[in-house]
Amino acid sequence: MRIPFQKWMEESLDTALHRRAPMTKATPMKAYVVEQPGGPEVLQLRDIPSQEPAADEVQIRVRAFGLNRAEVYWRAGQMGPISAPRVPGIEAVGEVIHDPAGTFRTGQRVATAMGGMQFARNGSYAEQVTVLR
Image (cartoon, rainbow, N blue to C red; front, side, top):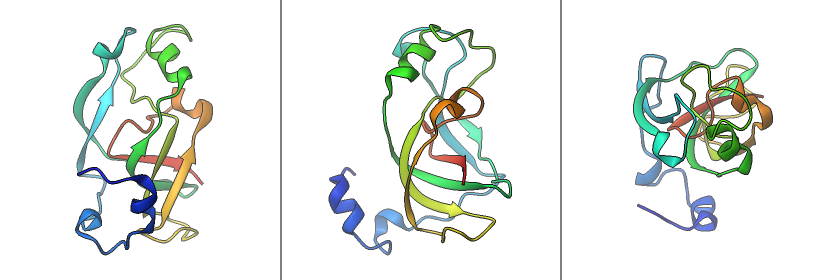
């Protein structure tokens, strides 16, 4: 189901679109994984384990993510080798699943721009992402 972003931001969190059980450490999630350099064909949709956030992180359910030119260069191998399977993605919007510090409430709508962190940890091309607060 696709709805315009502005309408999504205005809707209540109590809609059927948002009623889902929270993901936990043991819950698999869908993500696009890159293992080798190449074009869009190297993006593989897989089930991977979700990550519990550390004390200084926030876990977010991704509702939309941006396509960034740096991600295209990285995926093509133009920013160094791809040494391990990685989920790309620098930007995302969604809702907080869990914030151990309690700064953000569960269900709160947020946006994140992770910058260069995308190259050291899994990014936003997934159902959820864990980012630094």
